[in-house]
Length: 250
Image (cartoon, rainbow, N blue to C red; front, side):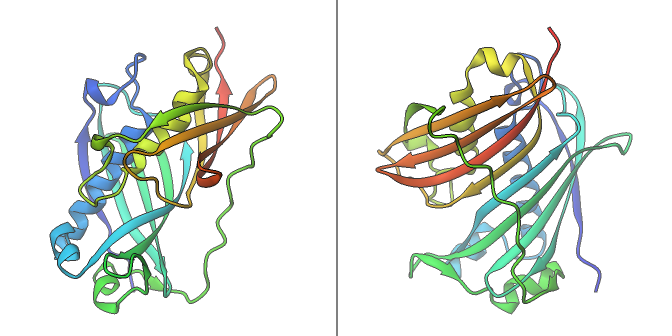
Protein backbone atom coordinates (compact mmCIF):
# COMPACT_ATOMS: atom_id res chain seq x y z
CA UNK A 1 0.00 0.00 0.00
CA UNK A 2 1.33 3.43 -0.95
CA UNK A 3 1.08 6.11 1.74
CA UNK A 4 -1.19 9.04 0.91
CA UNK A 5 0.93 12.15 0.39
CA UNK A 6 -0.32 15.72 0.52
CA UNK A 7 1.49 18.89 -0.47
CA UNK A 8 0.80 22.61 -0.62
CA UNK A 9 2.78 25.78 -1.14
CA UNK A 10 3.11 28.51 1.48
CA UNK A 11 4.37 32.07 1.18
CA UNK A 12 6.71 33.21 3.93
CA UNK A 13 5.62 36.58 5.32
CA UNK A 14 7.58 39.06 7.43
CA UNK A 15 5.65 38.28 10.64
CA UNK A 16 6.84 34.66 10.44
CA UNK A 17 10.50 35.72 10.45
CA UNK A 18 13.08 36.98 12.90
CA UNK A 19 15.27 40.08 12.57
CA UNK A 20 17.46 38.28 10.00
CA UNK A 21 14.45 37.78 7.67
CA UNK A 22 14.56 34.02 8.39
CA UNK A 23 11.54 31.84 9.19
CA UNK A 24 11.51 30.94 12.88
CA UNK A 25 11.24 27.38 14.17
CA UNK A 26 7.92 28.03 15.98
CA UNK A 27 6.38 29.46 12.80
CA UNK A 28 7.69 26.50 10.80
CA UNK A 29 5.84 24.17 13.17
CA UNK A 30 2.64 26.18 12.73
CA UNK A 31 2.93 26.00 8.92
CA UNK A 32 3.48 22.24 8.93
CA UNK A 33 0.51 21.65 11.21
CA UNK A 34 -1.59 23.83 8.93
CA UNK A 35 -0.70 21.58 5.99
CA UNK A 36 -1.31 18.33 7.89
CA UNK A 37 -4.65 19.82 8.96
CA UNK A 38 -5.47 20.49 5.31
CA UNK A 39 -4.79 16.84 4.50
CA UNK A 40 -7.06 15.72 7.32
CA UNK A 41 -9.82 18.05 6.09
CA UNK A 42 -9.48 16.62 2.57
CA UNK A 43 -9.85 13.10 3.99
CA UNK A 44 -12.97 14.02 5.95
CA UNK A 45 -11.15 13.98 9.29
CA UNK A 46 -10.79 17.69 10.00
CA UNK A 47 -10.66 19.27 13.43
CA UNK A 48 -14.44 19.66 13.82
CA UNK A 49 -15.12 16.04 12.85
CA UNK A 50 -12.47 14.81 15.26
CA UNK A 51 -13.93 16.89 18.08
CA UNK A 52 -17.37 15.45 17.35
CA UNK A 53 -15.81 12.00 17.78
CA UNK A 54 -14.31 13.17 21.09
CA UNK A 55 -10.69 13.19 19.93
CA UNK A 56 -7.84 15.49 19.05
CA UNK A 57 -4.35 14.78 17.77
CA UNK A 58 -1.48 15.57 20.14
CA UNK A 59 2.21 15.75 19.24
CA UNK A 60 4.65 13.76 21.33
CA UNK A 61 7.95 14.37 19.56
CA UNK A 62 9.64 16.22 16.70
CA UNK A 63 13.00 15.61 15.05
CA UNK A 64 14.22 18.30 12.63
CA UNK A 65 17.04 17.91 10.09
CA UNK A 66 17.80 21.37 8.74
CA UNK A 67 19.81 22.45 5.72
CA UNK A 68 18.49 26.00 5.82
CA UNK A 69 15.40 27.91 6.91
CA UNK A 70 13.20 29.66 4.31
CA UNK A 71 13.50 33.43 3.96
CA UNK A 72 11.01 36.28 4.00
CA UNK A 73 8.97 36.47 0.74
CA UNK A 74 10.12 32.98 -0.30
CA UNK A 75 7.54 30.43 -1.45
CA UNK A 76 8.02 26.90 -0.18
CA UNK A 77 6.34 23.54 -0.73
CA UNK A 78 5.41 21.45 2.29
CA UNK A 79 4.80 17.75 1.69
CA UNK A 80 3.46 15.52 4.44
CA UNK A 81 2.37 11.93 4.89
CA UNK A 82 1.75 9.44 7.69
CA UNK A 83 4.45 6.78 7.42
CA UNK A 84 3.49 4.16 10.03
CA UNK A 85 1.16 3.57 12.94
CA UNK A 86 0.61 1.09 15.75
CA UNK A 87 -2.07 0.78 18.42
CA UNK A 88 -1.17 4.07 20.10
CA UNK A 89 1.13 6.14 17.90
CA UNK A 90 1.13 7.55 14.39
CA UNK A 91 4.35 8.68 12.69
CA UNK A 92 4.24 11.53 10.19
CA UNK A 93 6.98 13.11 8.05
CA UNK A 94 7.16 16.61 6.62
CA UNK A 95 9.45 17.60 3.74
CA UNK A 96 10.02 21.32 3.14
CA UNK A 97 11.36 22.24 -0.30
CA UNK A 98 12.07 25.42 -2.22
CA UNK A 99 10.44 25.91 -5.63
CA UNK A 100 13.51 24.39 -7.31
CA UNK A 101 12.83 21.12 -5.49
CA UNK A 102 15.73 21.38 -3.05
CA UNK A 103 14.99 19.83 0.35
CA UNK A 104 15.43 22.49 3.02
CA UNK A 105 14.12 20.72 6.12
CA UNK A 106 12.98 17.20 6.98
CA UNK A 107 10.80 16.62 10.04
CA UNK A 108 9.96 13.30 11.68
CA UNK A 109 7.07 13.50 14.15
CA UNK A 110 5.16 11.25 16.52
CA UNK A 111 1.44 11.83 17.10
CA UNK A 112 -1.10 10.25 19.44
CA UNK A 113 -4.86 10.50 19.79
CA UNK A 114 -6.23 12.24 22.89
CA UNK A 115 -9.64 11.24 24.28
CA UNK A 116 -11.41 14.33 25.64
CA UNK A 117 -13.77 12.32 27.87
CA UNK A 118 -11.18 10.03 29.46
CA UNK A 119 -8.48 12.76 29.43
CA UNK A 120 -5.84 10.34 28.21
CA UNK A 121 -4.34 8.84 25.06
CA UNK A 122 -6.64 6.55 23.11
CA UNK A 123 -6.05 3.55 20.87
CA UNK A 124 -6.15 4.48 17.20
CA UNK A 125 -9.48 3.47 15.61
CA UNK A 126 -9.15 1.98 12.13
CA UNK A 127 -11.64 4.46 10.64
CA UNK A 128 -9.37 7.33 11.68
CA UNK A 129 -6.02 5.94 10.47
CA UNK A 130 -7.08 3.99 7.36
CA UNK A 131 -7.69 7.05 5.10
CA UNK A 132 -4.03 8.11 5.48
CA UNK A 133 -2.87 4.73 4.10
CA UNK A 134 -0.02 4.51 6.58
CA UNK A 135 1.64 1.14 7.15
CA UNK A 136 0.69 -0.76 10.31
CA UNK A 137 3.68 -1.88 12.35
CA UNK A 138 2.94 -3.23 15.81
CA UNK A 139 6.41 -2.31 17.06
CA UNK A 140 6.83 1.08 18.72
CA UNK A 141 9.52 3.16 17.02
CA UNK A 142 12.50 3.94 19.23
CA UNK A 143 13.12 7.56 18.35
CA UNK A 144 16.23 9.21 19.80
CA UNK A 145 15.66 11.20 22.98
CA UNK A 146 16.82 14.80 23.43
CA UNK A 147 20.11 15.16 25.28
CA UNK A 148 19.89 15.82 29.02
CA UNK A 149 20.77 19.20 30.42
CA UNK A 150 23.92 19.60 32.50
CA UNK A 151 22.35 20.54 35.83
CA UNK A 152 25.57 22.14 37.08
CA UNK A 153 25.82 24.47 34.07
CA UNK A 154 22.10 25.10 33.55
CA UNK A 155 20.34 28.40 34.07
CA UNK A 156 16.65 29.20 33.72
CA UNK A 157 14.12 31.86 32.81
CA UNK A 158 10.48 31.98 33.96
CA UNK A 159 7.52 32.35 31.57
CA UNK A 160 3.83 32.79 32.36
CA UNK A 161 1.31 30.69 30.39
CA UNK A 162 -1.14 33.19 28.95
CA UNK A 163 -4.71 33.06 27.63
CA UNK A 164 -3.60 33.41 24.00
CA UNK A 165 -1.11 30.54 24.32
CA UNK A 166 -4.10 28.14 24.14
CA UNK A 167 -5.13 27.08 20.62
CA UNK A 168 -8.30 25.60 19.10
CA UNK A 169 -7.42 22.13 20.44
CA UNK A 170 -7.73 23.61 23.96
CA UNK A 171 -4.03 22.94 24.61
CA UNK A 172 -0.98 25.18 24.75
CA UNK A 173 0.16 25.44 21.14
CA UNK A 174 3.32 23.38 20.57
CA UNK A 175 5.09 26.35 19.04
CA UNK A 176 4.96 28.09 22.45
CA UNK A 177 7.25 25.46 23.97
CA UNK A 178 9.76 26.22 21.23
CA UNK A 179 9.44 29.94 21.97
CA UNK A 180 10.22 29.30 25.63
CA UNK A 181 13.25 27.10 24.91
CA UNK A 182 14.77 29.37 22.26
CA UNK A 183 14.19 32.64 24.11
CA UNK A 184 16.12 31.33 27.10
CA UNK A 185 19.26 31.20 24.94
CA UNK A 186 19.29 34.98 24.57
CA UNK A 187 19.89 37.27 21.62
CA UNK A 188 23.68 37.17 21.68
CA UNK A 189 23.76 33.39 21.29
CA UNK A 190 21.03 33.31 18.63
CA UNK A 191 22.76 35.96 16.51
CA UNK A 192 25.97 33.91 16.42
CA UNK A 193 24.54 30.45 15.73
CA UNK A 194 22.55 28.70 13.00
CA UNK A 195 20.20 25.85 13.93
CA UNK A 196 20.93 22.61 12.02
CA UNK A 197 19.22 19.91 14.12
CA UNK A 198 16.50 19.80 16.76
CA UNK A 199 14.90 17.09 18.87
CA UNK A 200 11.86 18.07 20.93
CA UNK A 201 9.85 15.77 23.20
CA UNK A 202 6.57 16.78 24.84
CA UNK A 203 6.00 14.98 28.15
CA UNK A 204 3.23 16.70 30.09
CA UNK A 205 1.09 19.65 29.04
CA UNK A 206 1.21 22.98 30.84
CA UNK A 207 -1.96 24.91 31.60
CA UNK A 208 -3.10 28.50 31.41
CA UNK A 209 -2.06 30.48 34.47
CA UNK A 210 0.94 28.31 35.32
CA UNK A 211 4.46 29.69 35.69
CA UNK A 212 7.00 27.57 33.84
CA UNK A 213 10.78 27.52 34.21
CA UNK A 214 12.75 27.10 30.99
CA UNK A 215 16.18 25.57 31.73
CA UNK A 216 19.12 25.42 29.34
CA UNK A 217 22.73 24.27 29.38
CA UNK A 218 25.11 24.97 26.51
CA UNK A 219 28.15 23.02 25.34
CA UNK A 220 30.27 24.96 22.86
CA UNK A 221 33.23 23.97 20.72
CA UNK A 222 35.05 25.47 17.76
CA UNK A 223 32.60 24.62 14.95
CA UNK A 224 29.29 23.83 16.65
CA UNK A 225 27.35 24.08 19.88
CA UNK A 226 24.74 21.93 21.61
CA UNK A 227 22.00 23.37 23.77
CA UNK A 228 19.95 21.09 26.02
CA UNK A 229 16.61 22.26 27.40
CA UNK A 230 13.90 21.35 29.89
CA UNK A 231 10.63 23.10 30.63
CA UNK A 232 9.48 22.41 34.17
CA UNK A 233 6.51 23.21 36.40
CA UNK A 234 6.52 22.38 40.10
CA UNK A 235 9.38 19.93 39.70
CA UNK A 236 7.80 18.08 36.75
CA UNK A 237 9.38 18.00 33.28
CA UNK A 238 6.86 19.16 30.67
CA UNK A 239 9.13 19.29 27.63
CA UNK A 240 12.71 18.27 26.78
CA UNK A 241 14.72 19.44 23.79
CA UNK A 242 18.22 19.51 22.38
CA UNK A 243 19.44 21.67 19.53
CA UNK A 244 22.63 21.49 17.47
CA UNK A 245 23.96 24.81 16.24
CA UNK A 246 26.53 25.74 13.64
CA UNK A 247 28.72 28.60 14.76
CA UNK A 248 28.40 31.63 12.47
CA UNK A 249 31.59 33.48 11.63
CA UNK A 250 31.30 37.11 12.67
